[in-house]
Amino acid sequence: MSAGKLPVVATKGKPFGRGKQYGTQAQKLVRRNVEVYFDMWRTLWNAGRPEILKKSKELVPVIGEYDAEILEELEGIAEGAGLSLEEIVAINSRYEINFSFGLSCGQVGEGCTSVIALPSVTREGHTLIGQNWDWLTRFQELNIILQEERDSGPNVVTQTEAGILAHRGMNSAGVGVCFNGLASTRDSFGRTVPFLIILRSVLNAENYAQSLLAVMRTRCTLSANYALAARGGQAIDLEVSPVDVGCVYPEGGILTHSNHFLALTNRADFNDILKRVYPDTLHRFQRARQLLEPDKGHIDVGSFRRVFSDHFSYPQSICRHPDPKAEGIKQWATLFSMIMDLDEPALYIAEGVPCQNEYYKISPSILSKG
Image 1 (spheres, rainbow, N blue to C red):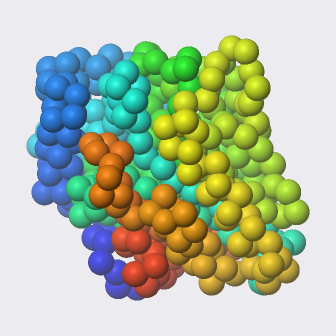
Image 2 (tube, rainbow, N blue to C red; image 1 turned 60 degrees about the vertical axis):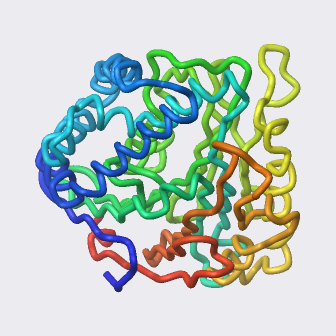
């Protein structure tokens, strides 16, 4: 792999062993990430450690029922990092924990803009997928690249928070995934498979159909969005909510999504929350498409870079910068930008706002398997 700023954690073998290698190699970062999240939950919402650990403990059997091997890997991370399983489950469930406390006070967060371009509109006839990940700046230095060589199933590469099994990434079967936060009035914390655990299951999939199944076989109590693509030119966006799953397909070879529902709209059984909390979501997905349209037929990584560096409606732009007027969990920025070429295969990563930071390329050899 070419040199970059992010530490690379390389693991191999069976689930528990991979997890223990992960926790051991990234022990300082994992422990720090746990500390920062628990401090955030306490300072923003007065949520104490016992309350958080109780929520996490309730999710342990849910994760095990969904995927026993993923639970084994979490157990390995905990042992390697010298932490409890509940602490590791807490950060892997931080999406659910954030929303369970934040919804009640209108402080829900984590905005992202995702983009997919199919072979019919790209310069090299490749499938490209990428996103800007917008979150609190305090987590900027607590990320890694996780590179997993698995005994069975495809190998996985994901740029993720330390101690968490997956964020955006791709596997050696040519499946790539990005994500966006969503929220509805039907959302609640319950016995649900954590969003980030489902992301990892998507990356464990041996083909495109299995990646869809990883999302569809769960019953979620919180809304979330998955942008999926596969080598060979297939893509879909799945808007998951407690009442239904909406499907958004590429139009003219391009698919874009931000933080509001596009398919599940005008329903009587729930209302979309984030388009009112963060109205910039209403222009970010459309702006991304508008910027890509002129490049149709020769869209490449440079085209994605231009989209992800865009400052229309700054600072609430695709390339998000901190807003000095915002408070608490609403004070966030683009922490990482990633572009994936599923055919090459390669990943391009910018650490920090992409308008000010160069993308560097990684081409892990383990992605050539299968």
